[in-house]
Image (cartoon, rainbow over all chains, first blue to last red; front, top):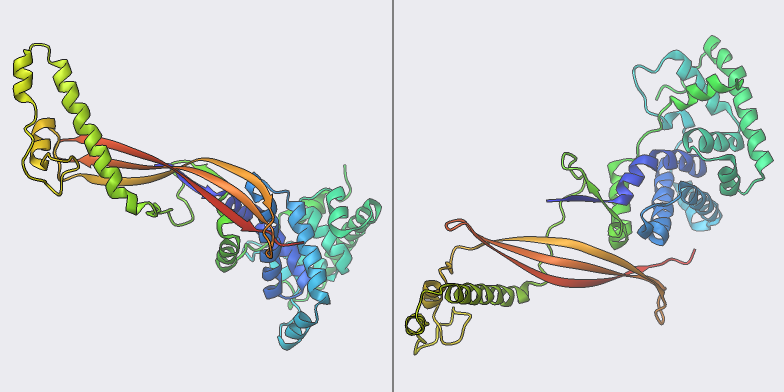
Length: 175
Length: 194
């Protein structure tokens, strides 16, 4: 008997963690981030999923647009205000392993210190594996802006990691 | 060499957390039929992460008819094959082996005027003890485009072509009958205006 599996499952297994990481930056709390990923993925897959392949950039873009729509929605704002979620750092969105060495922890703490606009470019480039052109379209920015934000982010991380190693803050990146 | 190569490499070594199974389940529910439009074959050793698709028995009312029709065709085929293949028999002997029409109706028999026992005797095929195995095979999937529906959201219409197979096996005699029936399904996927 031939086993079959819906293609979306393997697609989501490959890209789901990256989408969620990006959504965490757009939503600011884990529950909204999951809602964003679900809503964006279902919308895009319904439109293009019958072809068997969907460009990840489309889903990132849908997440971004939905996040903007939701942020404008009064209802969601009220709901969000009623929730008591603490703003969690981006570093908590990564797998924690015992093998993670001190340098990686310092790196995560440095990533948390980055400005949001640099963090989202870094996320899409490093973990989303999008091209600068795709990132520019996802974030509605110019190619130059995206490239310079990425470069600034890397430069800051390069400068900050040694600082973090010298003076670590144990409250961050330990979750 | 890129001055940031080493830090990029370290960043890439960090692994984002995987989505929870609950999120995957929610997506599966949200996709509904749209999630099953594109399927991939899995190698034998890989177990499907989802529950096995059970055969849809929506054609159950036709099942009895299909079984009866299959058996009749099989019996008649075997009967005629035996008679046509046996050249040594004289016309008179053929006539003598032709089935005797029963004076009564057997409600279990698929052939009018012939009892199940007579069918079994004539064809050499057992009537009872058949075990069915159902399988649904997807033959084709045709995207027929976006259709408009008065007063409702537009939908994408997808036509699915299936073959429903029933393999009847008789363990005692090691006989098998394969019955196939084509089926079409039209799936309408609601499209959100986005």
